[in-house]
Length: 385
Ligand code: FES
Ligand SMILES: [Fe+2]
Figure 1 (cartoon, rainbow, N blue to C red):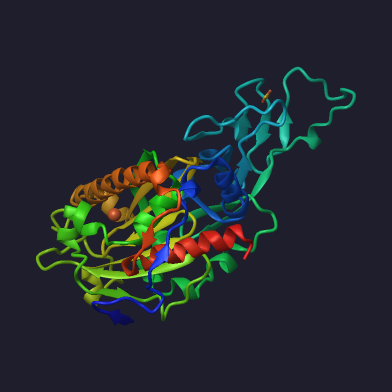
Figure 2: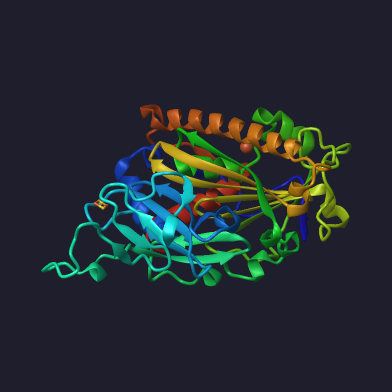
């Protein structure tokens, strides 16, 4: 682990930002959908959200919608949330349960089997109807993978495997000791942010703003303390980016508003790391904070160039969630407050980026070096690199 104190790496130089239009232009947004979102592995949720056969979640992305459902076979399957009859959305809720192992369209009640998306029920249509064969109208399948308790989907049937995409296991070598696959969702919050998805990611990538807008975060993890950068020794990929670890301030025993312990430390997170939080990103839409007794992450789901749904999750050891002796409130409040400060800042930046005064964009200073890396990721993806 290399410690960079009071400075930045060589790539930290002055650069231009993306142009203002890239944050509101519909054509640019469409290009991002084609070249980034519809080709990337996307984190749809946690396996424990759909623990029982028939449980499903939906995730909306721009004009698309995804169903992830727990099959009768016990596996997780993902489908486009579009009926093959006349195109209705099938599942209209954020989450729910498919009865009789079928996903029923709410329009004319066609039913699709949860295991393979096969069309198995078409009310009032005789089996021998001329020119119509149910076998020709299954739900469109998406690639799906499960890793560390996370459900991943990909619209692109040609996409590389998730392992290859994420560079596993090397890229995650510092994080496996957090046993993410054994944790469970203790709290979940959804936010509608009136900002372009890139602004929210860019904001998450730098802590230059922390002392200005995050009093709670800055008290607990002072941004002026040296950060433990690890990206030079732990492999990164095109999409996996490490943001190192921050130390907790003296007097804080946990990452929270008060820093007072509400539950035991993770048993494998010891030594100095018991008083640190590690951060990593998976482009285009995942932010993860690994504290010493819980994990917070969010995912971004662009709906429009200037509207992004963000989903925050707090993960804990199941024993913590099962016991009245332990609490989660300080951790939940900490990220809820911090997130909302970030959303407000991002919405303000959105407004400025839409101004004609910002048509040529702004400037990235050395402190913004991780934002510059993200800019390169976006530009490369749009250029097919
Ligand atoms: S549109 Fe779905 S059953 Fe008719
Ligand atoms: Fe922030």
